[in-house]
Length: 154
Image 1 (cartoon, rainbow, N blue to C red):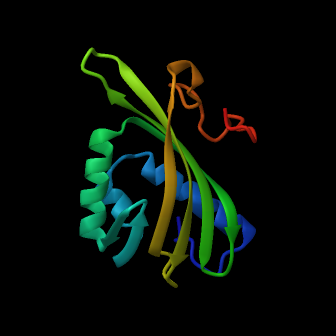
Image 2: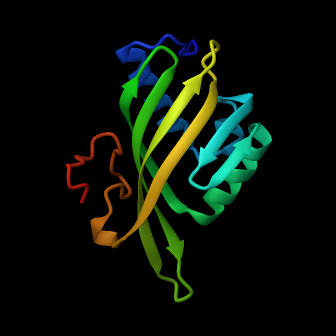
Image 3: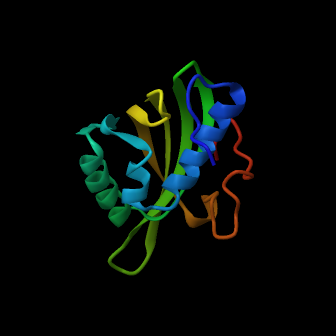
């Protein structure tokens, strides 16, 4: 598949978002980092990163903590070389008693791309909300793209 490069159309922006979603759902930090420029700049909540090495370190720690991670990204808006997405992901924290505390993260990201289609800048704002196992959307066997997400988000 040829790289998806700016300027984006509605079709290519949607494709870029779903490619990113699928890539992140691999939970492979090295593979994910290759979608970003070598000198990429990130703000992820309260953390600031620069370069692929820091991205790999960040994602490695993230996925060591966030068990059962499953993500959905949706196109929010786009221009020539920028895309904004809303996202939802679920993960759990293992409890000492063997149980699990599930969380859903809601948030927005804005992305800026170079002419080669690699992401130069990523800014993420998100909030984790505790949920019960019954409230989960992305259980095993559920297609994250087809689960109906309402305005209430629950």
